[in-house]
Length: 129
Image (cartoon, rainbow, N blue to C red; front, side, top):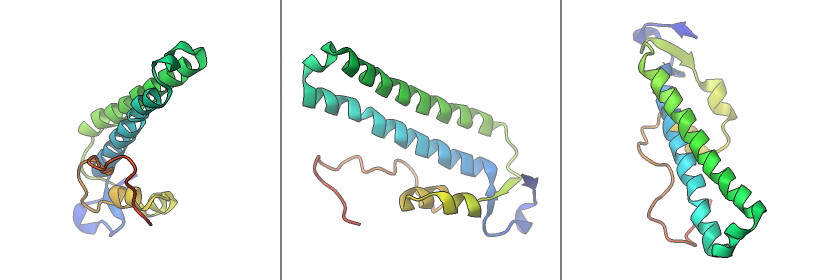
């Protein structure tokens, strides 16, 4: 990691705090998606699903995954607040390793704000790719 004046930064170098905040946004999206699994499992299995110890462990695992994901997001958000804007990193290699195009676009700074997942789609809707 280097400190480079903004005028000298290359096209693939970006401010580390900005990149970390995009990661925070993606982590919140992941937590939201994981959280949506639990009610679906209850709908599919009914209330009796909670009587099985194994099913209860799965439900607790879902809750823990959401808590951990949100915790990591808040941790990154907090440490980013005290970080100088002048810290620049080259994101080219890291972005080339991201396989999901939407996530790559979001982390690459395409200007998307809010959730990457459509919140208004009905069950059964999907996009062809």
